[in-house]
Amino acid sequence: MRAGGRGEGPAPLPPHPAADGSQADLVGGVLLGGQHPVHGGGGALRSCSAYAVRSARPFSGLRYALGQLDGLHHRDFEFAVRYLMRRDGCRDARQVGGPGDNGADVIATDPYGRRWVIQCKHRKDGWSGKPVGTPDLQVLNGTGRQVHDGDVLVMLTNGRITTNATDFAKSQRLHLVDRHLLAERASGSRPLWELLRAPPPGGRRATP
Image 1 (cartoon, rainbow, N blue to C red):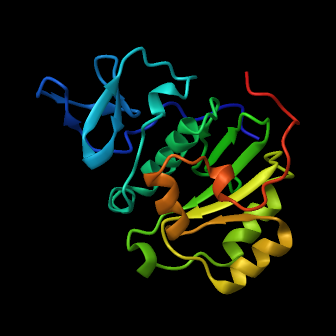
Image 2 (image 1 turned 90 degrees about the horizontal axis):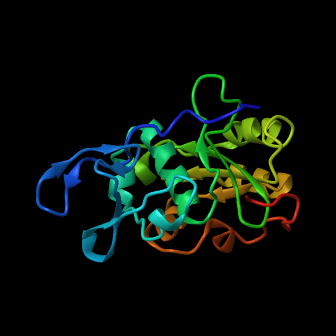
Image 3 (image 1 turned 120 degrees about the vertical axis):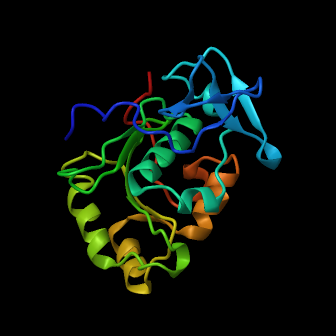
């Protein structure tokens, strides 16, 4: 298991105009100048001061449209998933995907003490792209608990998942987030554990 994440990482969204109309670059999702970009209704950009990396507060209004997620590089997609977990209150959420990641791209502990291990599969063609199949889930199933000590194992994609993979997931207590569920999660405000039907009970850990 990895000792830590890979830093704040690249921005999951392109540069946006700052509040004063000037251009500001995003670094790791943080608007330079100490403010964090949060997308509200209608795509308007709002900003939150007093950014703290271990607080979910700056992420509370974060929203993504599917078109934004489709256009990301697969690594930026992983960071977007991480930011959504931060939004949900997982203060330690980190991106760990890369060579030798052993089937995990995002790891996070939720407020109930459950450790989430998420494998991300980005498809640039969305629903029309290559579906996630059983072999992808076999990797997650083989390492999520044994290597990453996960309580909740999730396969997440902006595409689709085969019927065989869905059946395999049910038999192995794996959770699936396909394009439809991702759209509901990314554009709404409900945490992932409320959208999934049967996450295991919490209580093993407590988030600091």
